[in-house]
Length: 99
Image (cartoon, rainbow, N blue to C red; front, side):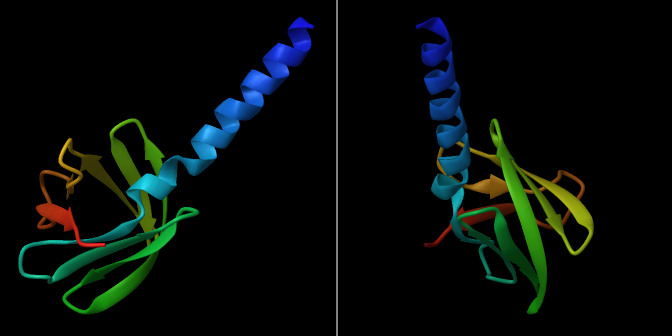
């Protein structure tokens, strides 16, 4: 009986992890709209800066979105209000979810 419980627990954990990105999915932008991060359910999306869009893939780990956009790794911190911030040394700033 114990192996079955462990197996079912593992399946539930995997299902929960697989669905985790769907809460973060949406469109995020800075105040003037010049930077837009579009995260789709399933770990894909795009990052647009000044109208130039690059394809991305991403994972959600703890309170971070780890994205790879056009070969560049970018880590966004997820805040309690749902906003994202990019790396401290970048021009990304605060991105708020619009949809």
